[in-house]
Length: 398
Image (cartoon, rainbow, N blue to C red; front, top):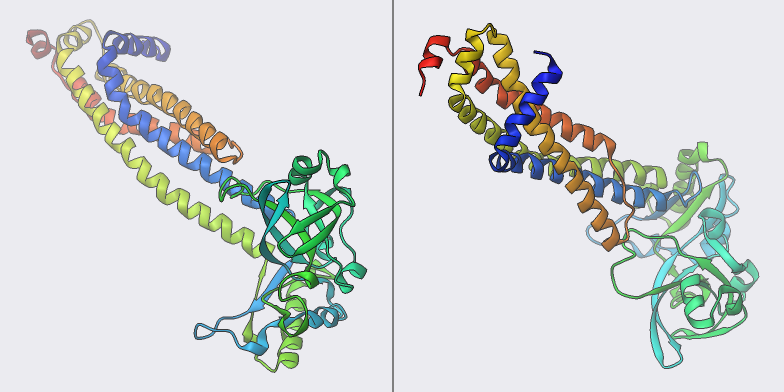
């Protein structure tokens, strides 16, 4: 009997016992669905974060004071005046600092929540800010502490009808009256669907709370080196300069680059997917036990059939192969249904959360391979038992 004929016979036997076959496959279905869903959602999250990291220029890194004994030395903090000095360092191309401030805006009779990022005019040179109308504020406006703002397109559409119509208009924020000089399109964020309705904007760091006088304490700096290949040398030189200027040790500061964050995210998601996928894979083993159980029942029910086939010339290898094919077909069909369920669940999650829908081909291949391996592993014993039956004893079986 050829492989194709064996598959047809196996499908026919499964069709004759539809309910029993379906109940046997449930464990495989849910196991594969869980693995595919977990891996697809995990890759969607990783893709979203990687997309955000790709907005930063090559070599970009941040530096901030290190916590020691639960606190930071006061003189380790940065000041606005430090930015001008750091810009003069040989290995530094651009320097900036960013801090988000929650504010409310009054639009007609409605109060809207805003997250205003106080930053410098160098910010769009270090990370991608998609300005769709107007411009970003310049260094003169920053130094003059002019209350100008770059709002996101979603708010411009809501309040003024279009990004172009918003340019030159004024907006009342809890920090004062600001003039709109630009409109940008906010990138989709991993957490963009959480936290309620909130709009985003950029404004000069000098007009933010604590942005002038003696309270201009900055908790972090953003640096873009003149040569990305010499980022490590730039970091070392910057730490030495800060140590001398602030009268602290070089180890008083910590740096993180976009490359470091990317590697950490990959490792984190890989570990999470492995752990959760392994837990989900337990149901595949449970499903495999169900396959073995039902195949043993099938061997007992078809003892006379086995005896007749052996009597007309079937070898033990033919019998073993036939039952093994049936076990693999049970697992394969269950794997197919499970993969479809898993992809559907990941798609529904993507619709609800706003994350991208990522089809993980390797997860599907892995799930199918594992389900086939389960079919072979747990189907081998029943197939071997069927192959060892004696023809005379099988024909006498009632």
